[in-house]
Length: 183
Image 1 (tube, one colour):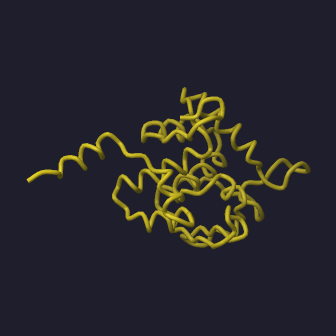
Image 2 (image 1 turned 120 degrees about the vertical axis):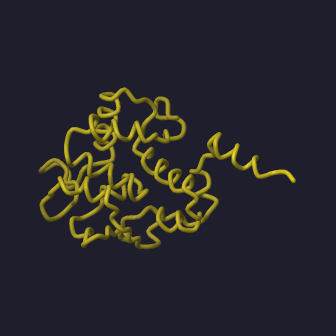
Image 3 (image 1 turned 90 degrees about the vertical axis):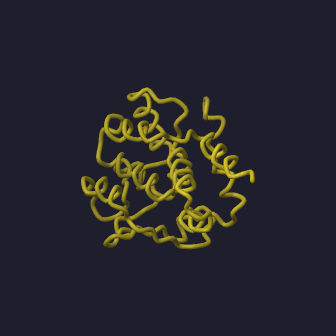
């Protein structure tokens, strides 16, 4: 868990996510931004670089030029949960998350972090960072026994070793693993 910006981003529980999206975030824009981070497992910087044209039908595309390694374009299907969140947000053509007129073209990572800190404080959560949504998404997929190769494809990680550093093993998963030993 992060403390004063140090450490790993907190993995959020279903209850914490519910509280953030219902009572923490106060605008459709904020719910859309962090909903995209959660439902696609993307980095906040990737979500902030999205254009309105990157959403076509039921697909959201992270262009190669906007991803961390700039190696590969990722197309992610928009699941019903994300579609419901996006339904309330209607930005004008251009950046999906525009910044302050005349100051920045799009919302900055600093501004996104501040929005999240205020929302987390509103619902009394500690240790949350913008990366919490990515870690939460990847861990939820892993806990649901989604093959690592599939998670890697969604997250855009170049190698499985890097992806595995994101994943935590829960006490329940340890118990289950140990329960299969024996004769």
